[in-house]
Image 1 (cartoon, one colour):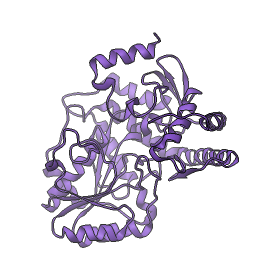
Image 2 (cartoon, rainbow, N blue to C red; image 1 turned 90 degrees about the vertical axis):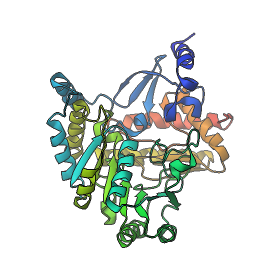
Image 3 (cartoon, rainbow, N blue to C red; image 1 turned 60 degrees about the vertical axis):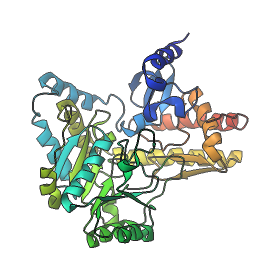
Amino acid sequence: MNEEAALRDRALAVIPSGMYGHQSIRYLTPDYPQFFSKALGTRLWSADGQELIDFMAAFGTNLFGYGEPSIEAAAWAQSTAGDTMTGPSPVIVDLAEKLVSMVSHAAWAIFCKNGVDANSMAMVCARAYTKRKKILIATGAYHGAAPWCVPSDAGITPEDKANNVYFEYNSVESLEAALKANKGNVAGVYATPFRHDVFADQTLPSAEFAQAARRLCDEHDALLIVDEIRTGLRLARGSSWDVLGVQPDLSSWGKAIANGYAISALLGSEKIRAAASEIFVTGSYWFSAVPMAAALRTLELAQSTDYLEKTIRLGELFRAGIAEQASRLGIGVRQTGPCQMPQILFEDDPGAKRGYAWANEAVKRGVYLHPFHNMFINAAMTDEDIHQALDVTEEAFKASLNTRVLA
């Protein structure tokens, strides 16, 4: 028995279903490795030693490459001084100052661990500020795995989501109707910088929708909350909706802001400061200094390098190569959303079975693609990596024409 198989058997005995959450390969195929022994730059090595070019970037947390030297050096230097202590390190102030300087609407920052921590804190702040209950969320949008927002209903009661109201993303009419139907009782409206649901084309917001969301929140005295967990630092060096002329009241950040170290943040405008000061939120590890030092260095790199322009250029190169291959082979694919966060779905593909077959063939050949979730380009990638990946995607396209992999 190989190492991967042995680990799966051992995990099955001591972990429910062998693994949990979105990183479980229960949602993929048996050819995907579940366990990884090493990561460096843009490469992963499975427990069995297979080397893969990683287009998932640890589900978006890897921005500058696994093990980026200066980020690791900052983390190591802080670890020698202290990590989780009885109180925070001074680096918490440095990091808060850096984020506030980079994000145009932010006047303050609170740090936590996961995206759902920040999004849940935003909800609490909105209710503390408005003294209202209802929260508006786009249908199908993902904001984390707390009872109020988790996609699954297993173990969740109707009461957990009783104050959620749903609207259609990018529809001014739907948002306006939801606000009117709950007039006087809406605390906050959640939006993502663009729509990035699984098994669906990604949708960029219209300026009309983003600006209407701001106007309608003002008219109804509700808070506009922009969830930057997936998009933060990937679309812009600051707030993603700056380009649309929209400033949210609150924004949630995570994933890429510390290049893989566990930290997230809630940022807020000055008018929410008093409400944020009243709520009680905390966590035993929320003040860990090592992730803060890593985040500070990550933000410094975001300001001082051309990482954003590079990931866009590489994303465009990858997208063009996929389009050429699919066209030449007569395969219908849809590529949507920002090119640095590619989503690739097949035409006429209910259940993404063709997508599964294609991605499965690619992973067998050393390129880790995802059949239904958006992917991520990281700044450690090179043109050579993209060309090597495209050699594999063409082989995978050809092989998948004759392969059927059930989801």
